[in-house]
Structure formats: C-alpha cells, structure tokens
Image (cartoon, rainbow over all chains, first blue to last red; front, side, top):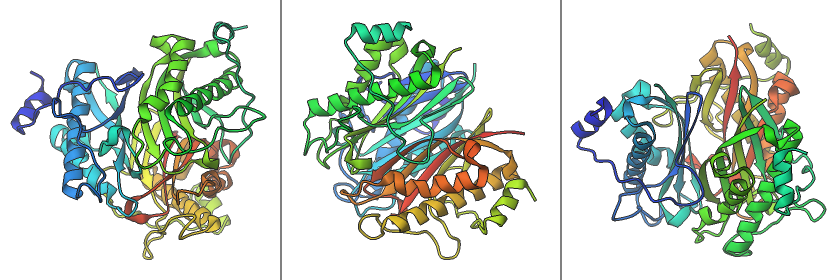
Length: 155
Length: 155
Length: 155
C-alpha cells in the first residue's frame, strides 16, 4: 500500500468508488508533469451525490462536508489514473464552486472542507494549492459543490 | 487543405467567421506546448450569438446546439492561430459555462454538444478532454454558453 | 526599484498591502515557468474589499474600478512572490468573475478595468492575455469581482 493510502487509513477515511461517467469527458488528462482533473462532485457511492444549495438547503458545516467528500472522490480519480497516490507530487491549483444562495458569501469556508482534507492527507506544503472559491446559481444534478484540480505528477 | 478541415467538410460543418473582439484580451495564447483559448460563445457570424437562458428561454436541445456552435467558433480561432487544425495535438481541459435557470441541472448534457463535436472532428482520444460543466446566472451579452479550452499544440 | 514598479509610480498607482489569508490556500504557486495566482478580490487595505453586485448595487464604472483594484492586489501578490515585477514575463490566462445581477450582461466591460491596467503597466504584448469573463450570483464576502491569473515567469 502506498504512503498516502496508509495515511488515509490512519485518518479513518475511505475513498468512494469511481463516479459513473457524467458526460463526454475524461476524469484525468496529463500533459508533461501536469495532471488536469475534471470537475468532481461530492460522490458517496451507493447513496449518490450530496445535493442542495448552501445557505438555503444546507448550512455551512454541511457544505464543508460536501467539499471534503468531493476531495475524497478526487483522490479516487487520482489513484485510478496514477496507480498510486504517492505519484501526486503536489497540488497546484484548485477551482472550487459552491452551489449557493444569492446572499451566501462564505464560499472560502465551504471549500476549506476540501483544502483541509488535502493538507491532512498530503501535508501542507504538498496539499495546499493556489485556489479560487466562488458561488454559482446551479450545478449539475443540483450537487452542492464542484471542484477541479491541477496537480503535479511524478514518476 | 488539412485533414481536420477535410473532416469538417465531410461532416457538413462550416466554421463561422472570427468573432469580433469582445474586450481587452487575445483569443489564443501559447506557452510551451500548451495553447489557452479565451472563453468563446455560440457565434454564428451575421446572425450574431445564440442568446438566452437554458431552462427558461431555451430547452436542452437548443442549449446543446449553442454548445456545438461555440465549438465551431473555437475551431475557427484554433485555425486562425495555428494556421492548420492538424497542429492541434489534443484537447487537454475544457471549462463549460451554461447560462441557466436556478433550477436547471443538466449542464453536462448541454456541454456534451461541444464535446461530441470535438470527438467527431478529432476522434475520441484526441478530442475528449478533462472537463468541468457548471451553471451561471449571467453571461456576456446574455449568450447561452461560454467555453474556454486548453489544447496541446504540435509543430 | 524594478522597471514595472517605476511604471506604476509614473501612472500614479499604489499597490495595496498583501490581503489577509482568506482560507486554506497559497496566493501563488509556480510549476516550471507557469505561476498560478489564486482568485483575488478588490482589496484596498484598511478600507477592505469593494463589495456589492454590479447591475444592482454598483454601476458599470464602479465595477470596472473594482476590477482595476483587483489587478493592483494581484500585482502585490506577484511582487511578494517573485521579489520583482520584472520577473513577470507575460500574462497567459485570466478568469474574471463578476458578482452580477441576473440581467447584467456587460461582464467583459467590467473585467476590462483589470485588463486595461495590465496593458498600461506591462504594455499590450506582455500584459494582455487569453481571458474568460463571466457572471456569478455570489462571491466571497459579497466582493464585486474575483480574478485569477496564470503568468509566465522568468528568472
């Protein structure tokens, strides 16, 4: 088992299964040392996606939980694509979208649910990236959060 | 004529003229092997942009048509920038924004109108990229779709 | 003093202080020759962020001013990260988000406030990038504009 998968086990975290294809795209594309991950949502496996709008249907804590679950789904895709999470050299850039009410303004706090997970799993230097956190009026299937990531890959 | 332009002709597809500049930006910027295309809309030439909100003014099929037209506008910019579409090695990353009603949730299906075009034109390996599809409450000029793309370029 | 800082002084422009950390992210991450800047807002220092929705709370000119201020905040981060603004080889890609009313459609005009600043400071060839300008229903802290940038860095 790779070091990062051991770390996940230590933290009591389980990766969800690979999400079913949601459209005409690849979950992961690498060019040079950069790996681009498609926008992922808070997929839990059999129980599907966490849905609803933060600031209307869900509170801040539930939004953070959705962002964390999205992080676990992204780790699943990284593991599937690279064979081992140890090949993730570091996270470079994160775009975090929050399905939010027009008067909700704590998007960075929501996306911190994702970023804290990555800091815990990879350590701060490797897990914390440049980031934008923004709101949107609607996401696919009414999911709560959508996050895309650029990573640096090593052999 | 290049191979991809031949393929477009076979498919009965015509590229629109280059869209007029919509602000202070370049349509295409290359750094190393990566080419960044600015956000494009469903530009048709003389008849202008396809406008309106999916799930309110337009249905799913009309939204997909707008995404396809946006793809044709992006191909025009690639051709203008590179001289030949054969220099597009592959699509790396797509960000697709849908001008959508707050209760519309089929953004991936809309952006598939773009992605299917790219798969048809370049073939699936080369034309299908990592992707995020999201909603937004407003786009420039009320256009229906805005799509930006990162491609890999070859000499 | 570096050439670009001299240019800023000539233009009568002052950079704001570094914005306080707004979440779990790094303001700037470099990989190879590419530098990724996190989403920044119109931070002014002691007087905080420019807030409000364009097309409802703020008019177009005020939105452009917010985009320009966001550009100054981004220049501050580039200078902090690189030591000198002369190390910015050029701007590659801009994503500009406008906190906007559902019926506001002049997002490119708003983001031009940023792009004109960069053209003035770096010159058009180096300062004008590929760009997407879009609307959103909500931004962190209700700030008016959020902009992220990819730059090319030189030694």
